[in-house]
Image (tube, rainbow, N blue to C red; front, side, top):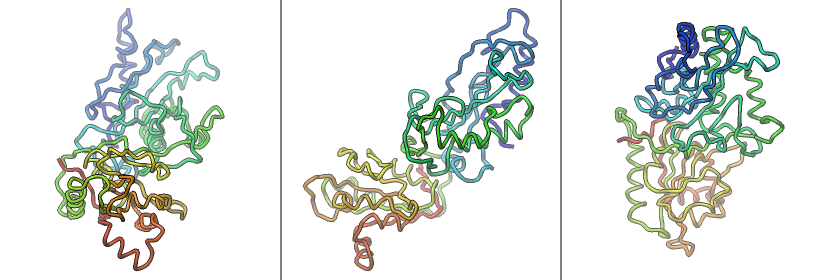
Length: 384
């Protein structure tokens, strides 16, 4: 079983804390001292602690409260499973490095004063998927941050949409349930917040408290380029091809001048976004309807996640901005032309962006104006 980001599992730490509490002589130490845990070695950040007041009640679990730092699970420790989705996507970048995604598990004791308190099952788990790159602590206004038992992002969207690599909340639930709940030790007293997968799905799609907190579109722009200490792949002609485009198109040419477009097509999770983000000051766009908001000061514009959705190509909306992005004119009065990088996993979705790219004429235009880099499943790692 994959290891936790700290030495002991949540259940083992609970047992250790209980034994420590029973050994303590009067006066008893504060709960935070009883349940103190070392900072996770795989992270450069220390999680924010929850309240440390001593819980009331009796019984073996009545004298301590495990704080958040006592159960810190790091995705980068999961080297074997799962082999797809968000975990595998970031594990490649985080290998032997400080982790950038993590699940914070807070083990707490139920309030004995609350109705339906079961002394045989006094504990529960709160889980929160976080990005370490975010400054200023938890940000519940962004859909990357999930608390299964508490506040949810107040973001109005039409439906539940998983970002590239899956939904962190769902992945975190599956992991916790497997290693802490169903497959963990002391399953009778430590469950994943008594939260079923069916209840989680209802929360994700409907929100809580009759609020329209529909959710989840991953904002991959929170993650900067991540230098990794990995061996250089034997085949990296795709990286060299893209590097050549940056050398020829970005630095020598100023705003408003004609630029060829760089299109990088490849599988999700191969590092295309991290590579493009490493190339200079830029403004990237997650939603094609926000084209007008792109910064005039950017060195490059990055159009990310260009994929086909329900047979409708989202990039079709960009056709009205073709003069800005395609560089078809030597100069344009708006001076908005920037070197443009398009990242996606569907060639059809990308080419459908421009209404007149059809047939032989369209193919000829692409040949002249587009540097098309196909990476397939090969990584676009950012090398030191």
